[in-house]
Length: 482
Ligand SMILES: *Cc1c(COP(=O)(O)O)cnc(C)c1O
Image (cartoon, rainbow, N blue to C red; front, side):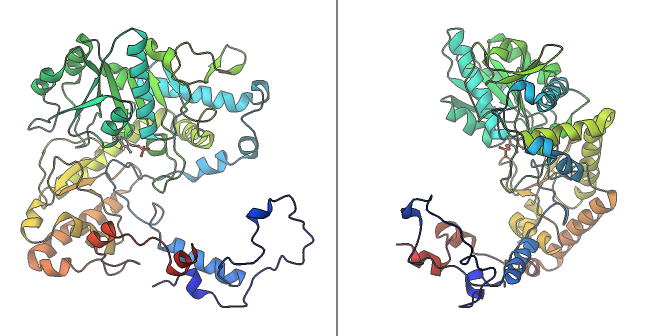
């Protein structure tokens, strides 16, 4: 067990001593300066501090360390060239307040990215501003709201299937809409009769993920789109996992009006630890006057930030969004070039390969060709005494990040696996073999499986205690807070 830095501290030890440097702190308000030196800080040499933090970072699991099949999260490889290019001085040393004519290159990148995303989604206009997928959803819902206000209609309901990502209902509710849930049918798709029974003139929009969170493609999407449009309502597409269809079809062709993308998933930026992301929102022509400002425009000669947008919902974020994430996405798209389509082809191939191998050992509730991910159920294993959570912990001991578990809610003991396109067949086979091994272990000796994890920095935790009485502060520190 790693000791805390405070426990490693030894009185009188220090690294670099700054006290002899003739610097005056007069410019800092006295109340922020602690002259009595009451703060309790660890005392260590510089080398030991570095070792401490390196040791901690080594305990972290990341995509560079192992396979990360976290369903819906698209934990694929983020090419390092993205980072190198995004950290060029020409990008990092510019300031949002610089005049358009000073930053033509940066504006050009954003403009070209907008154009690429229009093509990928089949939409007519784009904002790059939202900082994440859920932020994009909020932006999209604000556009829906303002659209109906502008045409003088009061619509209160947003329809969302029970297979939707959890952020969808949250975003609609944050915008003041009533969330109307519809059930999936026995094939795991939107039940058309349920949809018909809730659609009316009070429907503002339907939010769909296609493929849905079961990894299944909505086969009746054109019928759904007609039904919804007949009532004058809008179709919102959750495009967080665009690696399922990119280059083969697009939300525009399916009849959608608004789409958000997760650049940090599909277009490769490291994410998952709360790092910067981007959730651009793409809309059809009729909704382009509602986008946040500014959008980037090009008149054939110069690029500029356009703030004058007729019915703009305002700002979602300072300036134009997370620029470095936009650069990385643009680099990724350019590097793939005409091969961008293969991203989806490989994601879908990998998922189907794995699904077909594993369905002999784990229950596959919706046994259909999947897209970029699939959802198994651990029910058989639960009957033998090992639930999905324990399977997840057992996987950690073999060096894998567990899949998403207990989501989507419509599958009991759900194990949601997204292998992504960036893995080799050997790596997929490793995971498959381990999953099969676990299924066998559960048959032979379920109690043994329940003992895991044993190789991880943190062993089995008391989930209930951790949730009810989280202990988040180091004692010495919490005692010092008055
Ligand atoms: C990840 C994800 C989101 C939310 O994206 P964030 O960037 O985490 O806010 C929304 N919908 C789907 C389908 C997702 O996979």
